[in-house]
Image (cartoon, rainbow, N blue to C red; front, top):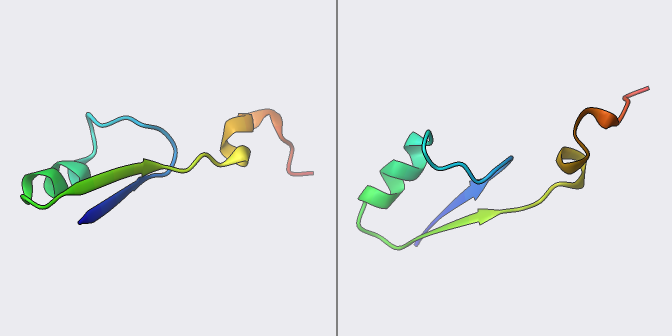
Length: 47
């Protein structure tokens, strides 16, 4: 089984690595781990 980890969003239309995995014939699992830092966006200051 192959695992693909989405890091920022669930888009699938422009991910050649996901296409490559899906074409391999083995089972694939796509997962999204929500990062609270990314969910807050640009509202958080680094200062």
